[in-house]
Image (cartoon, rainbow, N blue to C red; front, side, top):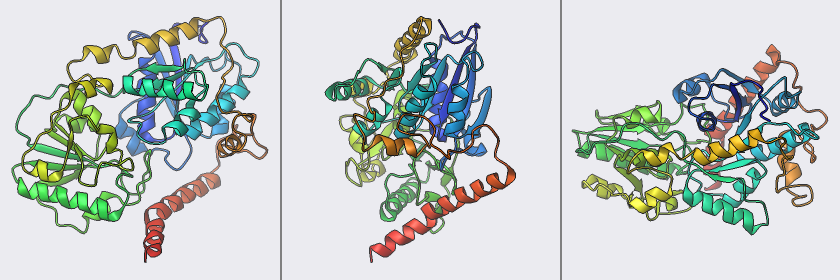
Length: 441
């Protein structure tokens, strides 16, 4: 029987960054029928990338309740009597290690219980690195969402290859695709979608900024925008050691080049050419049929993630773009990425299978215990460390001395936490690059 006894469906999303909150919240809404009455609770996992109020506003996905929690607090709440927290669905929008910890923590909290929420997890965008590591850390959820046919095939093959149950893999699409289709015209607004960690070096990031500046000067009639992910001091899904804002302070920017923030969908509303190294924004643009270029200037390499776009027809260099080249996407490649560039019908039905499976699980008389592939038997040298980072023992129970989960932090603890978070960000963005440069001398 459904966990919730009422007509309204209840979902809770646990997220550890702004982009994962966006993915998790939009995914949760699409897991229920379109006309369903849904209560969405958001829980932001306390950590280095916990989104700021500004980032949450920019994401623009509201919730009925939204607050910051520790892992222990989240598990304590979900472990209560199901009639007290009657969630139908739990969406784990976390990095792989966080998902694995919550799966074991929830399995421990729900031990002996036959009525529990459906647990869903997945990826926020393109999966181009650490496929085996990240995917096996997500094994054990009732549904592991794949954003495309290509990912679904890869996910099933990997699970089956290690002898793990692959039945949880469910093909969907990125939940934040959408917007009005682009009407082809001469590029007037060119947008470079920056990424926090790609490329990584100062030289490469300075090169891309110089080429963007050069493009703006070469085409003074175009508006050229550098779309930034976060302000200095904020963190997103990935750490940004060298923000473009800081690099731009030492450059003379032409009048038609501006640095902008904001929701990516709103920026795409005015974009005539989207340029990136490997951002998921490329898929958003392709979905709208916005001309899209994935840069080859720094090579086509796994470290950059642009190898994912081999066969897309979108690979191009700044020299080619400066000369007026406009890439033509390959329709077959685009279709395998869960992108409905030819029309919206396929995208509208992308979550039908996931919705059906959630409905079946909610209607079941009972659900089996969560059963991750990693256990103290299969990964005795790996799993304990993954769980310990979230103050969990190898059996998923809380470690002695785990942070208290039943009371709000006092003013001293809040002040210490803010100071620690600031020190961490200072270390990432200022101290670490200096140490790295010293090591290269």
